[in-house]
Image (cartoon, rainbow, N blue to C red; front, side, top):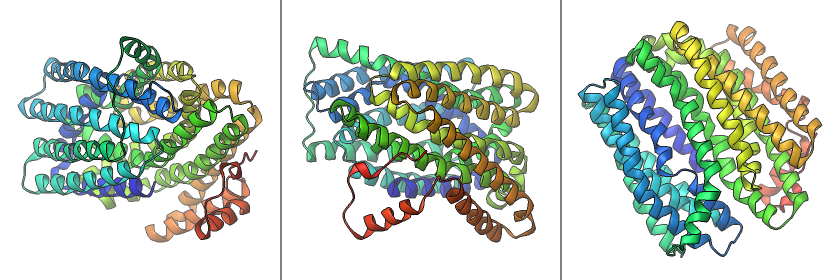
Length: 474
């Protein structure tokens, strides 16, 4: 989490500098180009990496062969994803600069699919240190190259090349560490390929849904309102989803742990760890959603200048996706780790359909603001459907409802505190004041407890406690 936080911080600083140097139009071209490959990248994996992680975490006999099968399948699937990306850009009238940027982004996509599979194998071994170091250093390389490209006027093509440099570093580093930690990659049998396809199918369908509802808004905005509007939305999007690293990195460790508990039939550890993680996610998500939304009129001009002031309406709404996103990560990890990935897939497909419909209705009239509202509605739907499915297995409807309501109420109260009292202060004082209010509300709504603080202190001073110390708090 520390490494990924640093990585996202570097990426955020780099994007802020790059956006100010490029302006709305070129920022929009770059974001649109990367959005295209970000959708079609799912073709290169189709849910195979989560299967490899789960098989290694569960210490299955066929795990090394499944890893080999996944890497061989990627060699076949990646060219298909490249052709699809370039074809989409061509059919929708991309100019030469956009098409060239998409082409370089396809090379980034190719590098990413292989290093993520190798990092996934290390995750299955519950060894996240090589990935943490590799992704952070790769981000440093990308940041330096991106700022340089923007400063010297290389535009979107230069930015895509900067991404490629970071991805190539991660390919080399992941290969080195899979050999260093003796990760076995065995030749698969025909039965392994069939098993991989069967087990990966729910993850693959879910991955397609995620990519569509994550990036379809940018594609619709581009086709209706143009690159400048995409540039405004990109600022709100990047600022909001920069904080997604918290649940993402938490789940990177949570998912293999839950898979291990499930394989060992340690149901009590599974339940306690799941609800403990839900409470942590609620405590982290509510102040971020409230604070970013409430302070948006001051954050955007400060970071990006008046040229991007048009992003304020979208950024006032979009951060409200963070609370359901944070809560949904443990839900998804639980369903996937307990061989219920098909239920998560159903939730994601339903969300994808809702998101496409909402964007189609709202974006033509409201532009980036409409896309922001579509995102909020969609992610709350995703979490609520997943929570219903998870509750049937884990049991604890009251805990689900209680955690959700407590997190939402804490967010609403924090928002009002920031927008009323906080508006009378300068930005630094407002951040401190709002943070203090959020901290108090975290204790009031029992999203954080005194016992949590004592436990954290003990862990910092001594050895980590066993997993049983992570407990449900309803």
